[in-house]
Image (cartoon, rainbow, N blue to C red; front, side, top):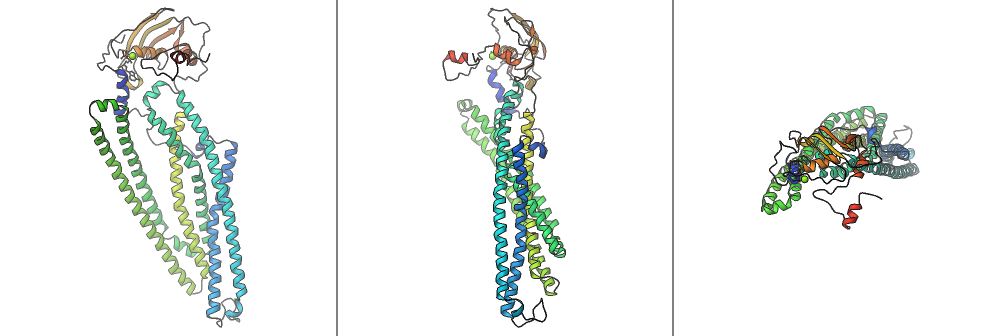
Length: 499
Ligand SMILES: Nc1ncnc2c1ncn2[C@@H]1O[C@H](COP(=O)(O)OP(=O)(O)OP(=O)(O)O)[C@@H](O)[C@H]1O
Ligand SMILES: [Mg+2]
């Protein structure tokens, strides 16, 4: 048996998870933030889902364009109001549109009623169109997203079940369940209605500016002159928020790890009266996260405030210059209003689209961590059909010069060239001090791990040649710390075998 390793601790099994908690290094999966492409994000979408996404994109455009279209109606309506007011207050002044007529002649009550009614109908039509479009948009994106996540969830769990034990040594179950819920939720968010909102806001942005430019490009450009400042504020806020959010998440994760460690080893904590110590440790870990959270809130406050200052300044500029244009007769009041509202809706939409882009980015990152696991081909694959399935197994086990160290502790050699023979029908006991590698040999026999050197041969077939599923079906094992299902011992023994 492993002659070089003399392990002092009397419960080697328990030392392993504790070791993992103290050393966060083996977290291989979360190395650097990777992102999948947009196409990849929808890789679990099937035909009907793609059709729904397509319809969703179309109707999102309609919902988006609907908002700036309203600014045209607002412009026309206010034009009617202005004309009607002039008609009432200065009925004898000459009309703007025809020099021979007075206001009482060129703009009658009927004309006013008709103009207002027409615009009211436009509002109705727009409202109805947006109602249908918004409903279809949200439904299409949510339903297709839900379908896709359902498939992804199944594939993800199936693929976790397929991984080899050494992979589970490196990825603790807490992280995996978090991924199963949190990351999938992020992907769902990014591919669901938020995606619809993204397209809607983009359409609103483009629609707004196209309308504004087509009504009056000069005023639009003047209103846009402060946009670079707005973009700077947005970028500044997004950057600070992203970095502090990441920091906050990390700090809370560290606090979470402390809580998890204390809870999983609660008996040890209680035995040493360590409750207060653990509470203090958790408290101090929480403080950092809270401080980062407070700082993040300040950033959000400053960012929002400066955004509003810039926005209102540009409105102020628009009305100031717009009034001059109206005064010197180069522009109609309704144009000023339409341009003003279009630009306002367009630029507001850009800000909101930015938020949705962030959601999409998070979804791409979250999907990457999931797909990495789904796409991982384990070295030892229990779903594989490869390998021999010998008909008649006698059970002659030959262990030949096995050398082994656990993948998570490469530097500690557990088995250093052990060899023995177990004949069919023979009862073999492995005897040795705790931690010398007895259970390890059984784990190698079940092919949880591949040995670094040497061979395990069953009836002349090398272990690596035998089909994994067949091998594990053939071996009955009661492990050191058995987990019993809620039934009789006999039924427990029968559990692994369908027949
Ligand atoms: N998954 C693992 N990852 C890393 N090291 C491990 C792992 N499992 C066991 N070890 C280490 O390998 C060594 C051998 O462990 P093993 O469980 O084979 O001992 P054992 O001979 O069965 O001991 P015992 O008599 O206490 O059951 C111990 O030092 C243990 O800490
Ligand atoms: Mg053991």
